[in-house]
Image (cartoon, rainbow, N blue to C red; front, side, top):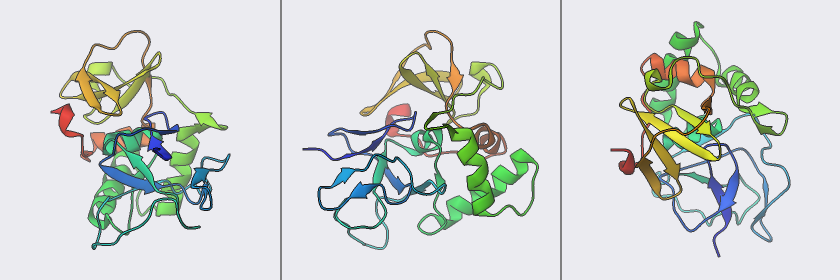
Length: 203
């Protein structure tokens, strides 16, 4: 029976048999006795994206009162949900993201805590995912941006759109009004040069 720990681009956490290529967390949001989620979907504004393999460490998922292991199809999915790279297991990526985030958003010397505060406002509308108007035409969004149209989520890569699923991406035209899933400040980091890791199916 799959655990409820796979994250969609809209930030929902569901159970599915498909595996992800990145892990991450939003703090402790599970009961280790039952290995099920609590009602809350975050316990800290630091939503991070981590490596699935690091220094050979092994964890039994959701078995301890420690951070709740969440899984993402790829880094673009994690960014769309509102996460950012971890400064511990992905230090170089996190430093590069912060540098691009600063350049894109016109700030200097921002702390991870201050960046998280901005991202937290941009990813949530109370307890629901915050959707944003497109800041530019769909085809001009930077690679790695994700949008929502109806019930479907789409990745923008190479000027084309691909429909997201737990299994990967398939090429598809966006049907209906598209709204931005990826936080606007993250989009500006992409414009400044950060390139998220995409699932192989995006190629």
